[in-house]
Image (tube, rainbow, N blue to C red):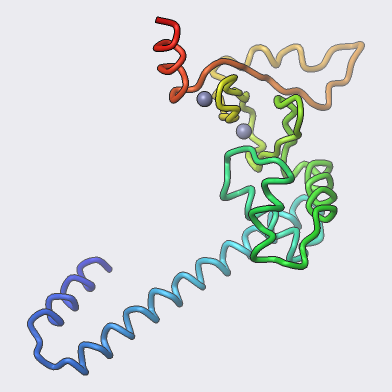
Length: 184
Ligand SMILES: [Zn+2]
Ligand SMILES: [Zn+2]
């Protein structure tokens, strides 16, 4: 694809035929937009399939919310999701966002994280991983767990564990230098 573009651009540069050049540029742009559109449609189908897999009926708003979470691994709150999606979906309400997130969490499509005392945050990554919250900037990062032996206590005779979360708190890579500088 890159080579094909290179030859076309080289041709345009050397050619004196302005109209022909304009036509080529229009074709290139429309090709780019069509591919972009196809990519967007494929993502929507993929997101819809994920919802169905977990027994959630795909609706446009549910797809939009899950798609947002699958693109933003910043562990956003319901308010952040609403504020970011609202401009492109004016029919979206805060209640719909809250209810959808609750439903997606109950069905196991996403996980809810309560590392933040004030707000519940959401994560489309449902694989086993811990979370790290920076005490300075408040960002929540994914934190790999190398030793999963801590999960051996998961089930015992007396308890059935249905949910567990591992949290770490401290300072992130951006904030740790500032903290060290201020301390000196
Ligand atoms: Zn930080
Ligand atoms: Zn995470």
